[in-house]
Amino acid sequence: MIELGVNIDHVATIRQARRTYEPDPVWGAVEAHLGGADGITVHLREDRRHIQDADVRRLRETTQIKLNLEMAATDEMVGIACGLLPEMAMLVPEGRHEVTTEGGLDILAQEARLKAVIGRLADAGIVTSVFIDAEVPQIEAAARIGASVCEIHTGPYAHAFYDQGRDAEAPAVQAELDKIRRAGQAVRQLGMRFNAGHALNYYNVQPIARLDGIRELHIGHAIVSRAIFVGLRQAVSEMKALMREAARSPE
Image 1 (spheres, rainbow, N blue to C red):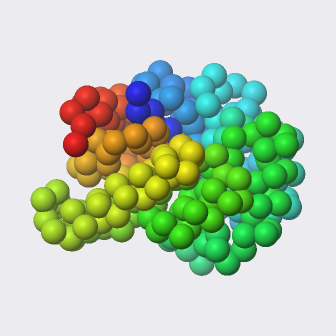
Image 2 (image 1 turned 135 degrees about the vertical axis):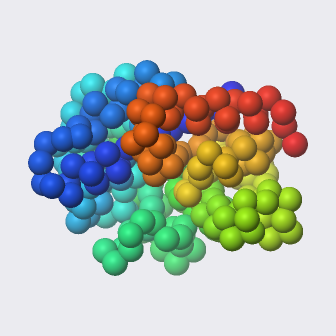
């Protein structure tokens, strides 16, 4: 059964715009849970631009569903993860200049270091994930370093979907979707879990949710954006319904 992990970073983005105490990301996590989320995702960035250390500690204490900590592969973040023990830690690339994560982690360029990081997290009992582009060499490298989960970057697909007038049948969209499909097959063949995420929204999510063997989607910005108008609980419920509908009618 496909699952939804709701990224609540941008609840904190709104709070940090005023450097105040509201809206509270922990409250956001509760509302997401009540809306049907299967997990909560937060990215504790090195520059602490949205989620703060205290947020993650409080989420660990109060969240009753899976907690996924997105993080750079640094000693500081590994130490935080091993202390908090989220259900999953996902290694992502991180740049101070970027607005949001702009591409997948280049495992091939740093296999030895990432293998050591994955080993530390796994020794602490944390399920380990990597956020990577839909490229078979990167997937093979993920298996070599011991990752349990590959989250395939759906950004290129989402951008093609938008650029092509939200036409799911457009050749450019189908080409990007096929890359994700083939990546998912490679992930599963290598014994890892196939997750996906980035730039998914209410219009483009169903072709991804329909892919064979996909386990979990991580979606944040679109859900928080809709929540401004309908509330977070309702926004999560609507996304979950779209995903489940698509999963019941596979490719």
